[in-house]
Figure: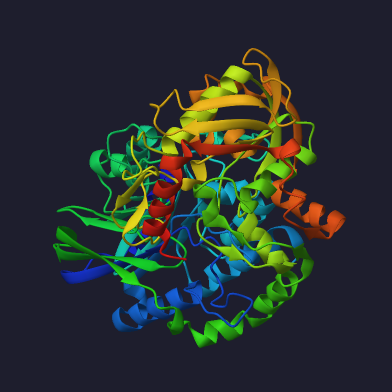
Length: 581
């Protein structure tokens, strides 16, 4: 019998050490952030401007903790933190010795856990593996229970963490976006596979409840809200919210859509993006006989005020800010023409012409595809600073060259322009697909595009027209290659695309009948990140002038036709969306 003494004693000690809930009424506050995309500092680095930032979010978070007691507040994030800004680039790829600034911010703000975002994975193994280790030491782990290690079938990142707040035991489970393989090159996520959240969430919640017996379960996932109909792999939050039992709070992100929802037994929190809001949820619960016998929820979105940046936190990270500022304000070349990114929605423009020039001149591609990845910003004529490169190209996408037939190129363009324009018969109709409704993703008030503008992809290297009076599938007429030689639908061409497109992002290649799961069979060239190609172009040429990026024998030409309808209609639509300027 002696051999059973130690296990029995261990169980008794564990039971004695587990605090019993005292009877009474309590409130647990959950604060969430997501998709901050590197908006750590409140300064815009140049010109003295300020912006909404993590510093300002911290001001509000600290005020809640002071009011309600730190022991009653939980703080979690839903991912996409280490991409999108000069600061993330600097600590991802330039200063790789100092502990990453994001990890130190998480530690400073006392986050409890962070879900892994697809753009966090985009930074590559050396970056996210380093950050994951930093966060582990800070006791705020990167969580992603659906990122499965290929070698042993176990999660690459932890599935969950247990904490105590408001006197109760809380299990925090985390997931990343299940659609990562459709956007990122396989070497970036090597050693992992990604499974649907909705397929495993119930199993995981049940297993964690059985193992650690939490009083409250919080799930943080980098997945968009979606429609709750199970149709979108990248948008599984409402799927889980509707179908998985045993979740008290579901925190999500990815779609940049500020949204909260309260139900009888649970709450959903999505703070949007770029430090615009803090999402807040409260669970009011009653304990009777040592158990929670009732719970109710309330949620809200707290607007972040740029001017309320925490001065103590700002001073704490001042040296980091100065290092990033010094790096990002370095002059890398000059512009001979003012570049406005919004011009890309109306037709050919210097912004997209430059992208096509880079793609075609730095590769042996015959054709290039490029889309406006920055919605509405301006880079003035004159010196180009390193920070301006993020306006030209905000993502860490590589450049691929793949084989496509002329027919596939045509189908690709038909799909793209169907996202972009309507079929019209007069200049009084809307050529651009716009609608009079606020867009929370872009913060656009009033008229906005109905589709995601980063999918409005045009082609370089060919001459073509887009007939807005024709139905979808019959709009594109390709007259020739850029050099005047015939375009052949049956011929195979080398086509420059981003790694995002090559791996299926936006659905363009799939619409052309291409299996992006087998894209390697078509890939004939891989090149550096497009921002690096732009940087090298500036270092080599010194300047970007209008003539050098407008050579029709290289980039070709395209236009909306008939011009008598298209020109006035597009001009009017652009004014509705962007104003008179």
